[in-house]
Length: 89
Image 1 (cartoon, rainbow, N blue to C red):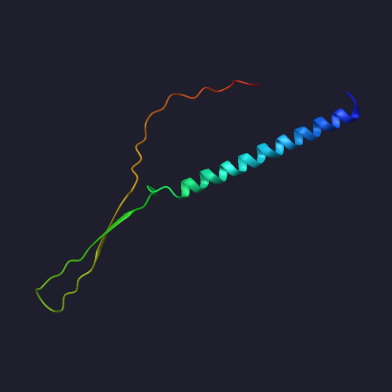
Image 2 (cartoon, rainbow, N blue to C red):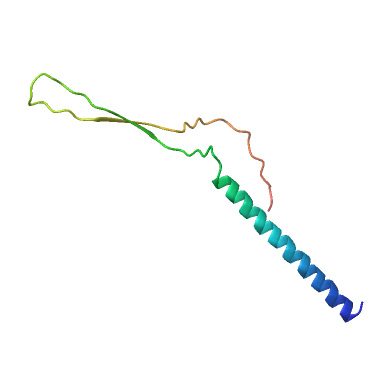
């Protein structure tokens, strides 16, 4: 192979690599944009319920709000299969 042929091949590889990298970056941007625009965005949030109790017995009594927090995600531990390990030395 001549030096000119080698230079042409390297130039061709550089151009192909640049196109592939550009396409990958563009595809990443497209998918990120689609993910941001998804209408059913869900996130883990806690639900807080506030209940006010009022009493009418005497004017000296006061009410205090009761706050209850329920977890949005419940984790149930399950038994998994044993992991194989290498016995390297």
